Length: 407
Figure 1 (cartoon, rainbow, N blue to C red):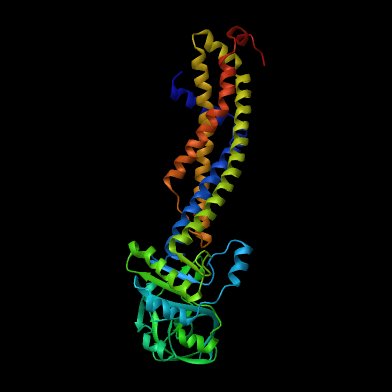
Figure 2 (figure 1 turned 30 degrees about the horizontal axis):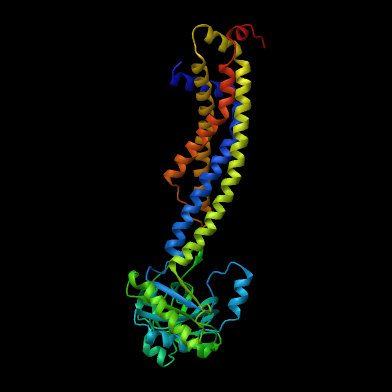
């Protein structure tokens, strides 16, 4: 019996006992489906996070009172005891950092924006220094950006996102119009280019005002975040070290004591996300492995039943010249084909689930070719491994005993 004939016989066996075949393949289908779906979702999220959520740029870092991502209560408690970062710290860093091409400061809160009888609640009110737009690479669609002069004079001017325009100025040009931000009047001087959404949340529902105006209106007690851009990726570490020395000197931090502030880069955020997604993937692999093992045990049991049902056939084949190797290979091919069919169905269902998730939720998915290949390899390997015992048992049957066997 050649390889193709063994595959044909295994497929005929699947068609002959459809219900038994379906129940046999359930474990393999679920295991492979889970791996494909989760890998596709995680790959999509990895790309999404890198390009939209933590897209600071390779030459930008953030100085803040506490880390932007805190993973345990001890770190949070320690961060609350630190000194706030003030406008004076921003000015000191901007004036002394020689390896920083741009330095900006930012703070934000939620508030209400009103024009005439129309208003929006839960708008992000951002207090930004003039350099922030350039550091974060945000373009102005119309009008102008905020300037250093606006900061110096605590100007009542603002740049708005497209959500503000669409809801408060649906049919008019917003430039030169007045809006009230938490009952304080501001003049619109610019409209930012549309940024889109992140995981279903709009990134255009904001108002930018000079950071000095923000501190004057809402009080200076909120800690600022300082954004610094180096002259290139190659000088990023040098710029970070320089800012670290400036802040430690200003705060009189002893030599052996660790920083009482946080400096983070795009890579910092991506590593945190990578650790989270890796842990999630490992948990999923463990769950999928259990399903695959159960599926493999079921395949082994079904193959043992098949060996029993085909004992006379095995005896006849041996009587006309089939060797142990031929019988062993036949049953290994059948178990592998059975498992491979389950793997193909698992891949199909997993891809469908991944696509449905991307259609009905903001979560993106990316089906990678290597994950499909991995699903095929895993399913085939399960069939081979759990088919060894039934195939060996079939190959060792005595032909005379097998010919006399009666069901």
